[in-house]
Structures are given as structure tokens and as C-alpha cells.
Image (cartoon, rainbow over all chains, first blue to last red; front, side):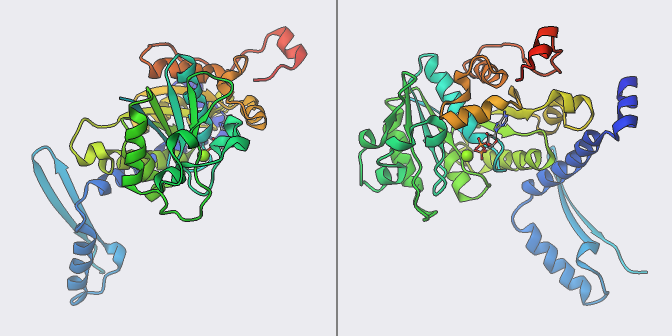
Length: 83
Length: 271
Ligand SMILES: Nc1ncnc2c1ncn2[C@@H]1O[C@H](COP(=O)(O)OP(=O)(O)O)[C@@H](O)[C@H]1O
Ligand SMILES: [Mg+2]
């Protein structure tokens, strides 16, 4: 960011910079989802159902992410348990 | 064999039809036999932008259904040599275009034309997928605005997975970014995404930047593609984009705020 950008953003709040940042995040997220196999949403639901038999968790408390980097795929399962 | 170019975007109202008309006309002006096909079933509009709305007798669906031959349905442009138009059907039946039907028409046109320009409907569902399925190249029309950029990225995903080239594992569709309705002064004020912002996010080669221009509305009022208005910035920017599409490497214009000269200010000349 140049000094001019700094003054510019001071003056107008540079909403374009906010737009770019938000787009970068959402686009990266959606690209990740596109690469996932079709069974992921169903599997996520079933995993959630199993967990719910034992603890009370919300839909948003479970995230399943498949990372395909180079020649190794990692299935990441994140569950936030209530305290 | 014709080269099939789809003009697509995901989001509606970003300038696909304006672009199809301009680029198709530009290719024909360069001596290439070109046909522009309106894939927007139920929302025919390319005919109005091209100024041939009163000459539409048969449409794309009539040809697919065998109710008319291609030579009966194809309209020869009155202004530009080498230029032809195939209108969309006004039917409300969204399933009127079948993949086999479209394939048959494109195959027949392919032997007769250098370029087939497909004006896609909005959305990322069936209609848009039909327009891009057979494409060799895609012009992704994007406005410098959040929802348009996001939808462009979605349509890129479809080009890469749901097209014929993707399904058959052939060389992927060649993608081109066309940023339209660009306003350098708002970019300067930090109110609009810049060309490089959009390039950073979508990461595909830039075909052109079409400035926001009053000439576009004037052109549509008259039913003459804006590329014919060689005085207008938008017309000139479309001409440049056609040159690049044909392989010329030329610099981008109209990216910065135009400093109005004394006379221009005096006369209040506008873009
Ligand atoms: N460069 C531009 N400057 C000003 N207005 C534009 C420009 N490009 C498109 N428009 C206007 O935007 C509207 C939508 O354009 P259109 O080509 O019909 O979009 P789409 O086919 O994507 O729905 C029209 O009113 C058109 O005149
Ligand atoms: Mg349109």
C-alpha cells in the first residue's frame, strides 16, 4: 500500500479494499468446496448425527474439509464441543 | 471448423448481450464470417441490440424442432458484411433447447462460419450450461463489484467441470476476462474494485476493460452495436478486445481518469 492509498483510504474509507478482502475469502472457500467429492455433505450429516447421539452440538459446530495438496488428501474434521 | 465463443457471467445485467453484439460485429468487420446466437430462451434481446427485431421470423428452437431450416432462420446483418444472427425463442418452455438439438445446429453452422458467438442467459443452471457446453473459448463478463466477481468465479468452475471439453478430458476452454462498466474515477476514490483487484481474484488472462459509457445506452436505443461508434470509449475498447481475441498484443486504454482538456471542459464532452 502506497502512501497515497493511505490518505485515500482515510478520506473515503476505501470500501474497494474491503470488497477485495471479502471476495478473496469467499472465493477461496467456494473453490475448496467445488473440489470436494459429492459425498462430503452427506457424510458430514451422518457424522453429525452420530455425534449428536452423545453430545448436543449445532450444525455449525461441525466442519468437514477435504484438502487435496499434491499427492496426499487429508480429511479434516472439526467439532466444537460445548463446555 | 468454426471457433465457438461463449459470452457468459453468471450474474445478469452485467453486459453479456452488449458484449456479444460488439465482439461478434468486430470479428465480422475483421473479415471473419461470424454468427451470434441468442441462447436466452424466453428473454430474446440480442435482436433489439442488433437492430433486427422486425426481421425475426424463425428462431433457434424452430430450427432444433425442424420447423424451419437454418437458412430460413438465420438473419443477415444489414450493416456489417460477414455477420449473421440467430434469435432466441420466446417460448416459456425452458427445456426447449436440448443438448442434441444444440449440437446438431452448431455442427451444421461449424462448416459455414469462422466464429460462432453464443450469448448466454444469466445464471449458472441449465440455460447457461447449454450456452457454454460446446465452447472452445469463453469471455467471462465481469463488473467491478462483489456479486459479479463471485458469480464469475462460479461460472469459471462450471466451464472447468461441466463443459464438453471438461467432460471429455480435452484441452480446457480458453478463458478470457472482460471487465465492463469500469469507472476509473471511482476506482481512484477507492469506491470500486480496480482491474488488478479483479485479476488477482479471478486469475485468468485479461481480454479487455470496457469503461462505463453513455454511448452504450445510445447504441442500444438505436439498435446498433456500440463497437460501430468509433468515437466512443466503449466502442474503441471493444475494438481493442477483438484485436486481442484475434491474437494481437495491444495495450489497455481507458484505465485511468481522463484529464479533460480545456476545450473538452468548455464543450462538456462526455464519454
Ligand atoms: N460499458 C457500459 N456502460 C454503460 N452501460 C452499460 C455498459 N455495458 C452494459 N451496459 C448496460 O447494462 C445493461 C445490461 O446490459 P446487457 O448487455 O443487456 O447485460 P446482460 O446481457 O448481461 O444481461 C444495459 O442497460 C446496458 O445498456
Ligand atoms: Mg443478455
